[in-house]
Length: 107
Image (tube, rainbow, N blue to C red; front, side, top):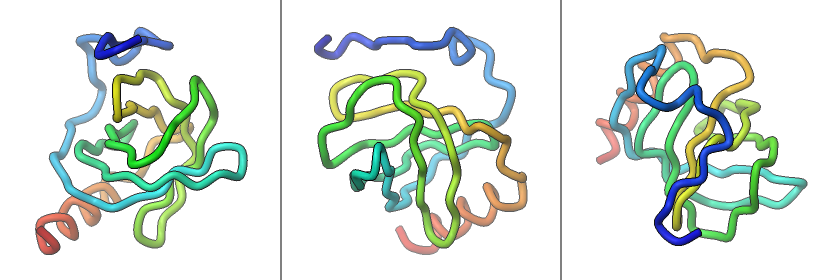
């Protein structure tokens, strides 16, 4: 696979429905009961991009844990050391904006 992206859905290609916020937030994804630490670098109401510190597997349903929030999501693309996820349900804008503000304070 290498640096080549593997797209599981085409919904991410060229047509984002929500504005992305550049962030730096420590997070954990839980896949089949296994926790993997990472950092969110890009966040919107509909999804996120994460750099991972562990080995992720393919196409699974995940739970994203960031601060005191938990979001169910699916991996929609992957490349070496990073994944893109789509949330099952859109995250309220107030929560996304709050996490983005928290990220700016902790940089």
